[in-house]
Image (cartoon, rainbow, N blue to C red; front, side, top):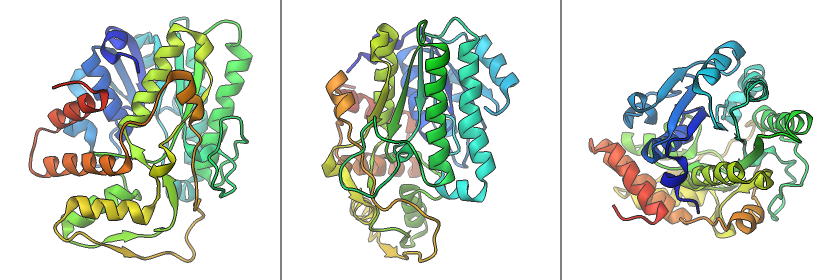
Length: 354
């Protein structure tokens, strides 16, 4: 594991999607590390939202814009002069991609192309990381985890648009950056959980909303298996990849970032853990849908490559991830210091005393 503070202090970073759930956690880490951070994103996608709750806006250069708009993106990019670019802006919801596939493709594919073209027309970037998803693979519903060299062919518009984003990144890398930097990688992570996720149509936010109302958690797909992990697992891995390839381009490539096999659990088991951790008689209700839009029933990643290359390993099992999520959420509901909770959890993850 890299020393976050020592590497990122003073580095000029452009982070797209900084107002989202994962982007807010990453912003908090980079701000604490002393990075010169510029974020480019749409306004926070929910109300409430972690970006505002954590008080991040005044601690970084916060640019509100649409990644589909090349001119506004280029203006922010040129002003930031980033050494490292981390691309997390996306339309991330599978069901929303069925409702508006064109917007999903415009954001997830052309947004990536716009950012890559900013990199192509600059000389400041040394490290570029495109964050995609475990859903980029041609999913055969098998038990073995998918490896980085397997076919990319996501089924639904969200998953497929992220497959296309990967392919566009590969094309730019081969066409424009093969012999002269920057180092370029993509990272494919599984489903993340943690404090501050208020998105609709995600299981843990649905759990939180239900227990706040004293209602049962409604679970549509209790038998679907996913590689759930705490948000700090992939975020720290992204920072590791970006730093390692910054120092040595030989590390550029494609990386899966997923939990160990023991933490690939069904949605029903995940909700069981949440209800147990929450207490107060929290419970859930199976309302399996018959004619729901297609979503994978079984999906698992093989993360051997990042483990063997960097010595990275998940630090928190799923039970600990749920514990941290409940801790954050109860702190927020009790008007606790959300930023302090985030900082404490970050320090705990890194094995630092606080």
